[in-house]
Image (tube, rainbow, N blue to C red; front, side, top):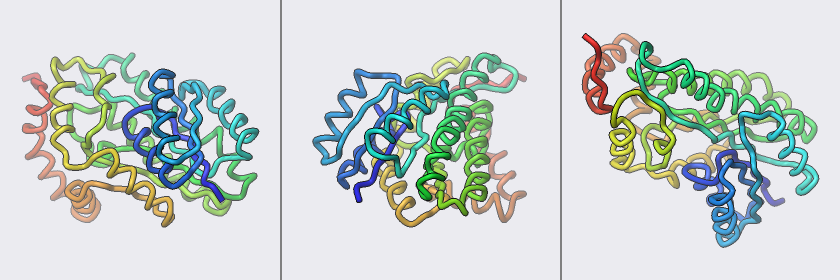
Length: 273
């Protein structure tokens, strides 16, 4: 049976890489995005890679958009096997300097966007008796570096939601995978919000230096779905730090404190005295 996949934010970055990974398996891939021009290009790439492609306008800030896509895919394909809640944005800044408008913006997209995706498709998965949610979080939600307050909170929320859903929906035949990459080569900084001058460029440099690509993360996601794996942690160093945090939190806290000044310098922030 041909796999049917829906990906939010599928017109660029990690979403595009996931779409092409499944296309190479001959899957039916629907990408939802707010950029129809880029979406049309990725549609063509999916077809060339061997998949059946379909682009839909979808803003994850609107539940009705996601419900419309669900109903459309039920009519078109008879349902969906995998929903990738990938659409997300980035921000940087301290608790005192980040405007409330930026908090509301990032939580609406990064947390509530995933909530809406899960809420819209869970009834369909239950009716099918099977389905997989792939929720894109971040190591930021586990490691909680300074000067990333709103982003950390948004990704920690995705992790909490994913863990809860994994327990809640397991008996209904619904699988959940939670993806927590660290820096990798993608375009996340293009729409990044911050009051720190030059932070977008500095973070983009860190991402460019990474040896992990969006395609690598997409491969890890593909394998995790196949093996019914919850945690997808593509970066070895950060994975080890997460294990240290769980088993020796005092040691982790000391290392994080030692690295905080370096990290603040890297993102270009100047802490207030």
